[in-house]
Length: 269
Image (cartoon, rainbow, N blue to C red):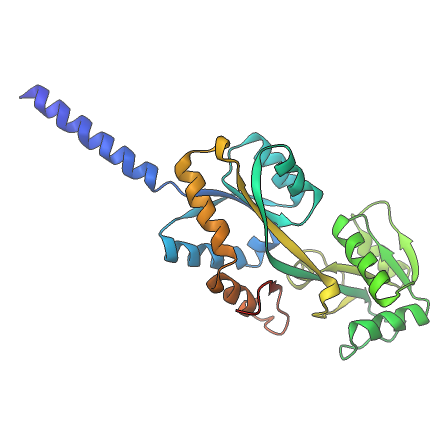
């Protein structure tokens, strides 16, 4: 009788272990802006509702922080801005299936004295022309994304301002104020006041040349279990589904509804 009881206990224990294993959430690494804006929570909720698969943000921050973490810990899924950082994770054999799925944007921000006379009614080309015509300093801080957007503006709009390149990123708003100029900055951190200055104001635009894509990738099949890999594949595919893209297109931050922080990449469905 005792032996039978022990066997029953073992069977129940094994069954509980199997259930727990099936319910283990996907381990996801998410770029900071997606978490602070609340966007990722909405995506994760919609994905769980569709497939019954939970996910857990095991790390969030800038791309350098994500890169360091996923190289030392097992992660099933990662998303960040298009960059050498995420491309190298694939090139180094850690992740696979790089997939674009959403865009966000930068914006022009400048000193409140506004020497170029920009208004909220100006289109992006008009604002750039005013900055260039008035020879207002345009400050560029060391950021790969900012460099990309700046060069896109130069090439597409023939934007050739009096440019100042900074060596350090920290404290660059102070430089913008001191030089009475303008710069480029991410919409999300500006709206959420992650970085702010009382003498700085922003000029929001939905011009495509200000936008940057996010890429998502899943852990290489050999790095995680088959079950996790299959679930991660579903998450990756879900991001470009009609449902997820509609969520992205309609998403706004409470109190800032007139400034959409994200843009769908599929608008023809």
